[in-house]
Length: 430
Image 1 (cartoon, one colour):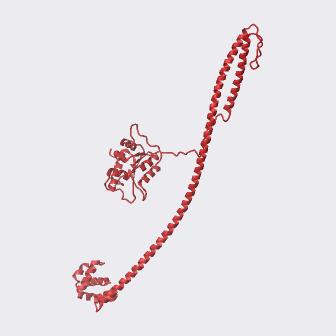
Image 2 (image 1 turned 135 degrees about the vertical axis):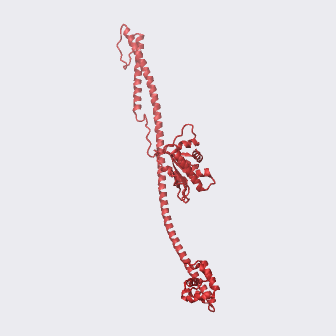
Image 3 (image 1 turned 90 degrees about the vertical axis):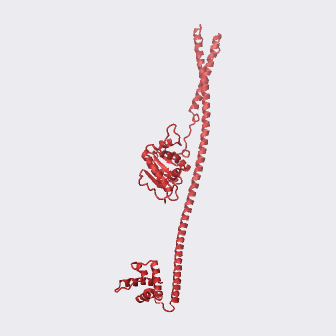
C-alpha cells in the first residue's frame, strides 16, 4: 500500500539533487538514488526517513497527489486527523481482497487439477479396456496354443507307439529270418552231402558187371531185385531226393519272407510335429589345453582373440575393484583401464552401467576405443548386456565380463564366453 509513496520519496530526493539550486536529499537515501528499481532495503530506509523527517515528508506530499500514491499513501504522507484508522481500514480491505483473490485462484487451480485428473482417469480407463481386450486375446491364443500342443503331444505318443510296434514286428521278422537262414544252411549241407554220396554210388555202379536201369532222383526208388549194394544205393538216392525237396521248400519260404512287406519294417521318418527345428547358435571360443576356465590366463587368451567383442557389466566389475570409492571415480577408473586393455589386445570394448540419469564419465570423449552405455530408466544393465550379446553377429566371438549369475547363465546360453570380475581385473593389471 505504501510502495508508491516510498518510490515517490526517492524520486523527489533524486529531483532535488538535480535541481538548481539543489535541494539536498536525506543522507540515508543518497546511496539509492541511482537505482532503476528499488530493493526492499531501500524502501525500508525511505519509510524510516519519511517517519523521522517531517520536512522531507511535506516536500514529497507537495510534489505528488493522491492519484499518484493512492489513498493510503496520501494519508500516510499528509497524516490528517484520524488517518491511522483509515489506513488500517484500507489495509484490512486490501487483505480481504487479496484473501478473496487467493481463494478464487486456489479454486481455479483445484478445478484445473480436477479436470486434469478426470482426463487422466478417462485415458487410464481406455488404456485398461485396451489392455483387458489384449489380455483376453492373448489368453485365447494361449488356449489355442495349448490345445495344439496337446494334439501334437498325442500325435507324438501315437507315432512312438506305432514305431515301437513296427520295431517289434521287425525284430520278430529278423529272428524268423535268422532261423530260416540257419535251416537253409543245414539243408544246404545235407544236399552237398547227398550229392557226394550219389557221385560215389554212381562210381560204384559203373564198376559193377551188369548195371541196372538208372533211376532218376525225383522218382520213387524201386526195390532192387538182388544185391545189398543196389538196395543201399536206392536208399541213398531216396534220401537225397527228400533232402532236395525240403531244401526247395525252405528256399521258397525264405524268398517269400524276405520279399514280403512285413519282412523288413522301415522306421517311419519323424513327422513335422516331432521334428525340432534347431536355430543356429554362436560357438564359444575354445581354450588351449591345460588352461582353466576361471583363470586369468583364460581371460587373457579370450581377450586376444581376433575380432572379439568384450561386454562389461560396469558396476559389477568396478564395485569388485574399487568398493567404497565414489561412483563417478569407479566409472572413470574402469573406462581408463579398459582403454588400456584395448590398446594392448585390440579387443573392442563396450561397458554398460545402470541408470540413465547419472552424470557421464568425464574421460569418455577421450577414450573412443571404449563405448560407454547407460541402461534406460527402469531397465537393468544386466538386460542391456544380454541384449548386446543377442545383437552381435553369430560368427563374432563375444566375451561377457560379470560375476552376476543371471548375466553369466544368459550369456552362456547364447554361446558367449564368460569371465568373472576377478578374471577381468587380473587381465587389466597385466
